[in-house]
Image 1 (tube, rainbow, N blue to C red):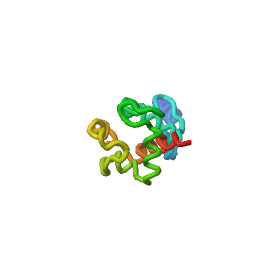
Image 2 (image 1 turned 180 degrees about the vertical axis):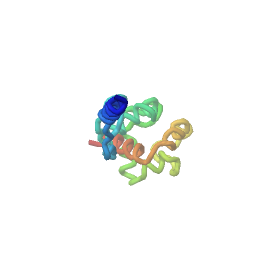
Image 3 (image 1 turned 45 degrees about the vertical axis):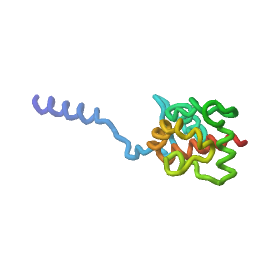
Length: 132
């Protein structure tokens, strides 16, 4: 009788064994948000960062100067001067768009300095998308 109970317990235990998939890696270009996952283009990710954690919309609007220059003006100047926007956002280049407003941007540069290269390139892509 003990053998039957032991055998039943072993069978029950092995029947409940959970299978674990071997490859659980996600594609590199997948961006997770909340409970749903969807792939975002660099422009979409850049817009999300620009409007969200970058807090850039507090001073920059698409086509009009508020506190800082418009996004369109930034894109035009960086393109015309062939300047590196990512380097500036990392805090490793002088301002070229409106140097007189640079002191106002210091707070936000502390935010952008902590961003990854991917996030900064995405913001750059979003800004350049205004030239279309």
